[in-house]
Image (tube, rainbow, N blue to C red; front, side, top):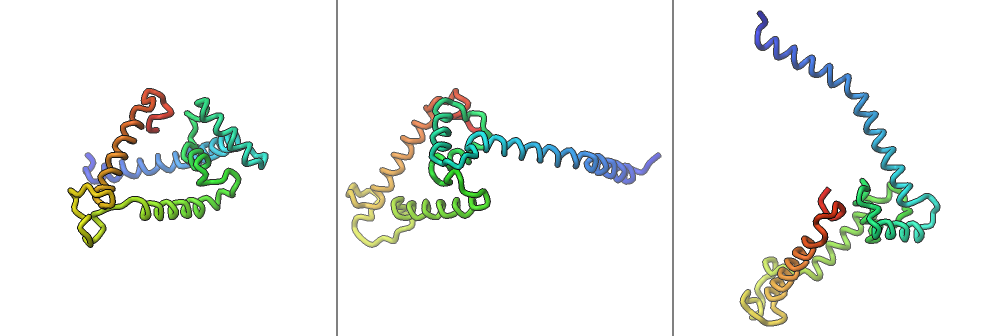
Length: 166
């Protein structure tokens, strides 16, 4: 009869051997997936070098629900929102995205007032103040607007796959 510890060690070794046998298959699957995404990228963005034509074609596909099954949805959105120009090199994407995120943060700092972060300096700082210039009044109006927008987004064709989380 085998010792329980020895049995566990043998089972772990067998498991490791099985994993080693599966590793080449995982690499093959990864390579296949990368090739598939590259083909999809070339299909979506083309290789002609005409960025305006590619963007127009992409918009048309989006409007005709031709992008609902794409695995490159985040890239498509970044191109359509002009965060990424369609023909910059892939190795330039992180730098470009970082630049856009910094610009976005600057806009947030400029336009989204958070009264929790502002020091009390005047009489209009009262959270109950209805003064137009009160940071609290502006904050509450923005929060109400965000709720309305979120409610509208939830109503946007929730039954269609394109609008559901993937």
